[in-house]
Amino acid sequence: MNSKIWAKNSGSETYEKLIEKFTVGKDRDFDLLLAKYDVLGNKAHASMLFEIGILTQKENEEIQKELDKMLCLAEKNNLSIDEGVEDIHSQIEFNLTRKLGKAGKKIHTGRSRNDQVLLDIKLFFRYEIPRIAERIKELFEELISLAEKYQEVLMPGYTHYQIAMPSSFGLWLSAYAESLSEDMELLLVAYSSASKNPLGSGAGYGSSFPLDREYTTKELGFKALNVNSIYAQMTRGKTEKFLSFALSSIASSIGKLSNDICLYSNQNFGFLSFPIHLTTGSSIMPHKRNPDVFELIRGKSSRIQAVPNELTLLINNLSTGYNRDYQLTKEIIFPALEDMKDSLQILCFMLPHMEVNLHILEDPKYDYLFSVEKINDLVRQGKGFRDAYLEVGNSIEDGTYSYERRNLKHTHVGSIGNLSLQQIKDRFTQLYTRFYEAT
Image (cartoon, rainbow, N blue to C red):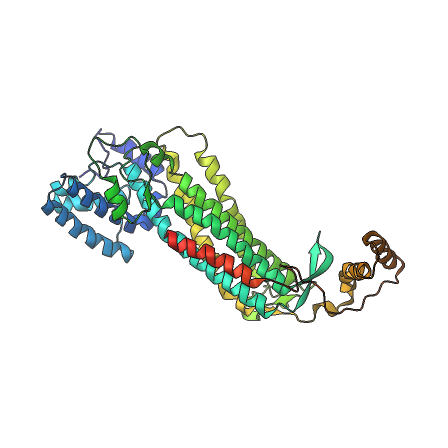
């Protein structure tokens, strides 16, 4: 049996092997991630073919039985692609044909590998995106917990890398919690895009068979159809792009947080630290305690933020209809998904071990941190803001500045004295609830 379902026995075997090696590339490795979803797609498609009279009841039952066996293998990561077989889609069809003969040969009726691959990727994303959402929720809850724990502990705020105004660990940590809320909004958009069924669009131009696309939509648990057959094919690359924007936004949040941690654990800052067993050492400097975990999260986050641009350059200006360029989207988005899951997981592990310096502001270099507080005190006493600003500025210049630190009078929503954590939690809960209503 020829290992390529599209082969026409041209006789140019040597050339075909050369072409195959280049065109398949890394696709077989990524296809194994799609094995379970390809089986599920085949099951729904076969059931639909029976419903419209293409398969007999006996043929459908035989096909379903064999697909159930393959599904068990796929769920245990034991469904492999034989040497010489082009992809998982071909492998499953060959398995059915070898076992069932004529019935197996009918499975591809009314279908193209184009809509088959599209379907597999969307089913894969529909599984993976909620896994990302769960890890965002875990990280959000950890950040809120730490913000509550350290909400009274002041720390210096910086602008331009210069000492600026008083901040707090609670304010800093809850900022990233709120950032994750907005990241969740983009993840919802990505999930919505992945929740529309492309199956039945064929190669982009439909089929003369009376396919029941609503049947497969319901059978596979999709919320809706990609109605237009051409547009269904146009979502290849576009769905990946929606997801890449969501991943990029999350990466921006956790990359920035990780960079802060790298900076604040530096001895010149000394705001926080981690137990020695969670840091790494140096091969030559015995005193080193390097924040390698957070440096790698920062690095992975930077790479993930490049993914939307890489996808844009890959799919930009392609003509209507399938182009083989789309195959390369797997090489871009699949590793980004893994890096994101790993980064969120290790962040959730590391943060509870963070040790906060409770006495940062005792260092005299932070005296000027309260200059704005002194200005505000003078304004409360009746001075104009600009006059107060000049008075405090001049005292700093001539060395007479002093300020007795006392409780800060920050009361507005989202300030040191009013973190409004419940509002942040409520907003996240609303988004998370919407997410699981969508799933």
